[in-house]
Structures are given as C-alpha cells and as structure tokens.
Image 1 (tube, rainbow, N blue to C red):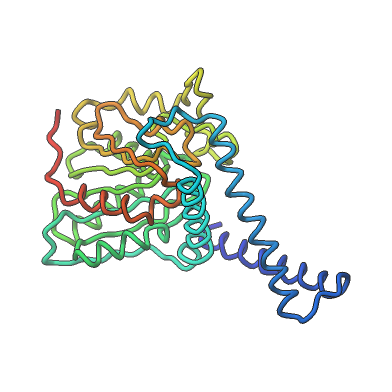
Image 2: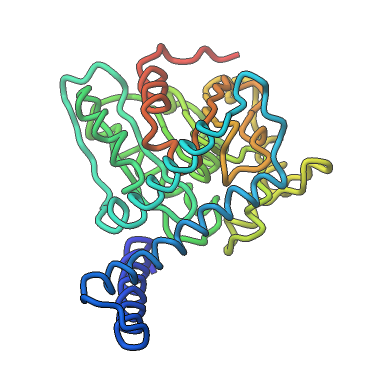
Length: 314
C-alpha cells in the first residue's frame, strides 16, 4: 500500500473513532448538545495523537546524547519544541502527505542547480510542502519522489533516486542536482552515491538523518527500519548496513554532504548520530524531527546551502 493511501485510511479510522466516542458520550454520558459530543470525541482522538508524540520524546530521551550548553532549553523552550513538533506532525500526516503526489517544476531561468527532494521513513513527497514553496519563490527547479515500498530495503530506493536525478537533469538541462533529504532519505541519497558515484551531485543536504542509526528504529517495521537500528549510547553499535555504507565512502564523497541536525530530535537518538565525519555538520536546537521540514530557521539554512558554491572535493 502506498503511503498516501495508508494515511487516508488512518484519517478515516480516526474520524470513525471520533464519531464513535461522540456517540458514546451522547448515549451513555448524556453529553448535550450534539456539537459538544462531537468536540469531545475529536478531542479524545487528538489527545491520543498528542500522547504518541510525547512518547517519542520520552523514548528518545532514554538514549539521548549530551546537549551542549548553548543548546539547552528552559521550560518555555521545551514547550515551544513540543508544540511545534506536534503541530508539524498533525499538519504533515493529516493534510500535506495524504494529498501529495510527486511533482517536477522547472524554471528555465533558474540560477541555482535543480533540487531533488527525498522524504524519510513513513512519509511521502508531501513532507516537502513548505520547502517546495520556498523553492518556487526563488524560482529553483525541483522535483519530489515517493520512495516505495514504505518498508523496503534502502538500497531498493536507489533506482528510483537515479531515475529522479536523470529526469531532473534532462528537464532542466543541468549537469548536476542538489539532493535535499530528510531522515531515511539521507541514507537513500548516500546509497545512491555509493551505487552511481558523485558526478551528478552538486551537493547532498540531509536533515535529521540517522547517519549512525537511531535507537527508535527498533520500534519500526520493515527492512529499512532494521538498516537504521542502533544500540544505546554506551555501545554505539550501528547496523551492519550502515557500517558498510560508511566504509564505501571516500573523503571526496563526504565533502559533498551537509548534515543539518537538531540536538532535540525526538526520533534520532542519540542525536549525535546525525553528525557525519568529514561532512559539513550544522547543529540546531529546539527543533523536533518532523518540524525540521517546516521550521523557518532550518529552511533558511537549507536555502543558503542550496545557493552555496559546490563543495570542493577533499
């Protein structure tokens, strides 16, 4: 099943659950009038979603890396972090991604290299709605992909990435593309570099990518989740697949990569797993995993990296 279809079914199930709870409140609790019962049912579903989001923060905290002093948050900052992540998760999963389809937009007069956008685990091309709007505003050619199947082998996404790169180069007339990738998408981009080389890569920009794995991948399903697994902070053991990927990379390949990450990522734990040796690493604080695709500071950084001169091979 495609991610878009799965998300639509989940939305229908949530709506049915809200209606069932509203009916129960009406019949057995005597809640009146009907709009109040409906609001109660919808609020209960939202509460479940909020608790799931909160649980991600709890699980990631168990394996968190040390937060440097300049990035530590007080109560207000922590509340903003949680609120932004919950809002981003709701918006992406309930609006942007259920409606999305892969797209390619070409601006013949664009000055920057075209951009290929790769989403992460359990997502689709709709994840990039906020960044795509900025690319449109800057008249930068770009394309999105839906990496399928949802639980597939990351190496299995490589042919899709290769077709996306070839199509974007052909349509734009550019010799190279910039790849911007979130989470698992960054590993798919690195797997593509391993398979096809860097001739067509001007730069690879990753957001919240578990370059050394994440402990929360143990709760995921599928071959891709297994490839992203990691032990705790103490043992730091990454999957064999991640180890082989790292071994295959040269210094020149790493020089093409910019890893943007957050010390408060609630899915990548330890958060230092996003630090990639030999790459350009840019740290943020107070931003959650899903929110990285919508946060203004992060998106401004991504746009600056896209516009920067091509990275010099080391």
